Structure formats: structure tokens, C-alpha cells
Length: 149
View 1 (tube, helix red, strand yellow):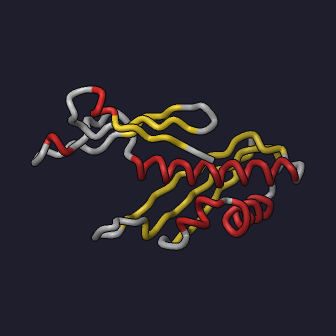
View 2 (cartoon, helix red, strand yellow):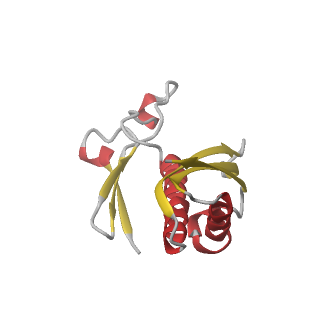
């Protein structure tokens, strides 16, 4: 796996904290820092997600992918899956994630809560590399609801 991240300020006025990432799979995405009122030259322009927001989003994508795949392999009629992540960070540098709660909403026809609970546990215990890594610094909790459609 590879990725190249380049500062976009180098292309303009050597200011701002925007970056473009080019992934090994051929995709690009933008990142930006938060504006800094005290030192505008050190802040971002708020034009894209923050890098740690993308880390949290990637973790959500990783675990949601697992949950859907596990449920489909179990031949459950899953029709939708979303996960809302809420995180706290340390007060001091490095400001790592210290707490992450993931709330899953799974919709489908006749999907048993026990299957969803098992899929979430399997993702977090075995398959989702991102949440396993973040679990080294953060307490990760999960909850879920099943919506019949």
C-alpha cells in the first residue's frame, strides 16, 4: 500500500495548510487544516476535511465494510449500514484519540440483532486493522440498532 501527500501551498503562495493525497489505487483526496486566527499563515483555509477527520472516517469505513460483508456472508438480507463515530482527543501533544464510540445502524429484512452484534465484534476483534490500531490509544465502545425495512 502506498500514498503520496503533497502540500498545495507550494503551488500557490507558500501559505495555507492544504494537502492533496494520491493513493496507490489511483484516487485523490484533499485535506486542509483549521484556520488559525492568531497566525493565519500557519492555518488552513477550511476547504477540506482535517487529516484526523479522515482517519476517523477511514476507521468507520473499514469497520462498516466488515460488518456488511460478515452479514452478507451469513446470508442476512442487509439493505443498509451506517456508523456514527464520536471521538475525544488527548489535551496535550500528541493529541491522540483517547475515546471513540461507534454507533451502527443496520437496516434489512429479518436481520437478527445477535448477527449484528457478532459482526461488529468480529470486525473489532479480528478484521478491522484501523480500529485495532486506534484501540492502542483509545477506548473504543460500540452500540447498534437494527431497523426493519
